[in-house]
Length: 215
Image 1 (cartoon, rainbow, N blue to C red):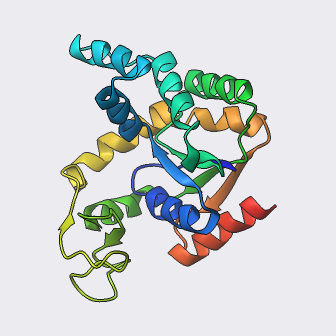
Image 2: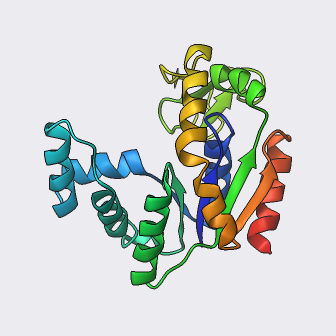
Image 3: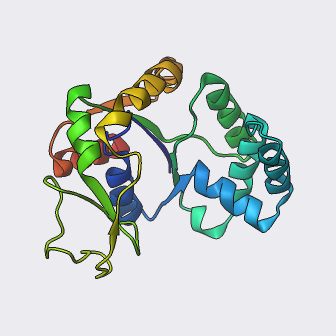
């Protein structure tokens, strides 16, 4: 099972991805995490990426695809994975399709979490994670069962992203709609794009995603 979750920053993709991970035995793959790991491990593509970054250049799509191809060969991806932060462009989507075809795999579902842009400010400004296990929380919508204690690992230290504030939301939304949103018609034309109401309660969104995956 290979899933892509789409939605602007603050749509709740991370929260839902964590649920899918636990329920389906999948692994969530962040392109940023994979890139850093490949560079640290000095893999073939990691070295190529490092050279680009040291030269102040963007890491090209073929390098990112190579890093993803290496990562999904690992044992924890046997049951499938959830892509986080990729693809961001139609060119990347096409490259991803070709890579999966070469691996004898294909996408199971592409799910767009539709939200009200105005509500994203509150969502983003209020979210935080456990510093130990990265379990996600929110000041009002998703508090730990015991104040100050992570439900998942019992940790007592939490962190917030520096850019999780109202001032940065507008710019991030602009970037999403300009760059990533055009990928949606690509998947719609392939007949695998599904939409869920990202403004619904967390459990309802999870149920709607589960229904898409079960179809």
